[in-house]
Image (cartoon, rainbow, N blue to C red; front, side, top):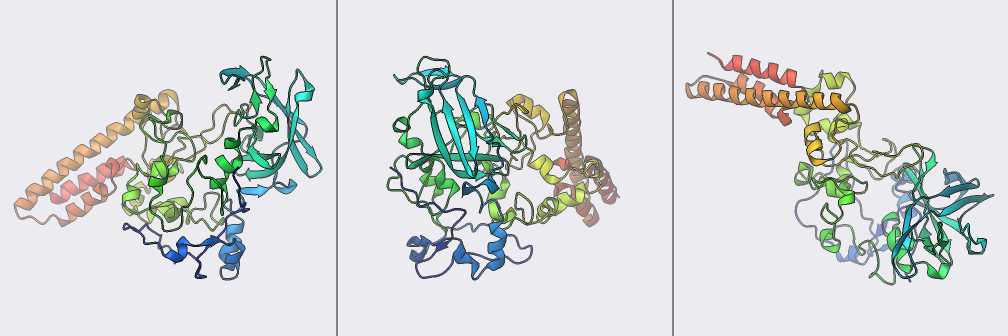
Length: 457
């Protein structure tokens, strides 16, 4: 049995010596990861969680901002004010759910659940249409999230399990397939039979599968059957040794064939494909985990301004471009929504609602070859997508050829002793932009022509 010390929101780690662990950043001096290993003090090794309220005395503004963020409100005890899903005597039938048979084989059933609200109390009833005596009703104990999706844990005896239903906020609907299949067993009838409390798998409780990531201050009597690593502390650098991360070969349903994520919660994995990692950029470089003031993603600045702090040449190149005039920003292409976090509803079969974190732009031709979504899909579809993608590829090739041509001209002039500083400066505005200046090919080509002219005798 797993024993969880639940914490609503995020608790702070207090060193045994009495100090708080934290770092402050001034102005727009964005934090970067240290490239060397971090030595962890013994006081941190022996630290215990004292709760978020311990922060408030010294950091009242940060605490107040954090308290309004989704980090602080991800896992909460159920109460009417935070339940946005519809529990008003709603009935859902899931079609073709594959579950275990008594002899541990698999069979498909179409089970039904009913969602109930009685005053301030919420519950889920698993229905057996063939024998009402098998119906099982369990009270909702905890609520997960509410920004993109809202999920729930139901109390079965003295433990909690993630429920089969999930609410999609964008659609205002429940999903049409269950989040899990652990609630039923096949019995030869079309809808199967709800499991009784003693039949529920102890390895599938919320404590064992969900709560280590969605709570802080987790403590378990056994770690052997958990779905997540434990014991990690601020300053530790051995996370990769604690857990085997998924990849396309091991879990193809969560990744595209190039290894990029096709499902949510793979942002850390995506980051491994980006040059950001080598540059020391981490999650908190762009995201302020303590604040909700800058939008749901908690980015430190307006998104384009955030990118421009490091990518100044690209910011200058894209200014005045066709894309910029249409309101397309950096993340629309470099963090396109190539993954999904939400299951189908009656309203939408597909939800592409999770941003890629590889920072790579997947052009249509590459997407076709790898059988994945492209970065252009949000604005272009069908023949238009292919035409626009081919045009951009041709322009990039033209820019690459022009760069090589200008470099030859400048090199020849330097050999003859001619001063080509201005030509070099103009060419650099294109080469430093990178990506063959896909941000503004027309401007890049005009600038390269100007550079070649400046280098000419």
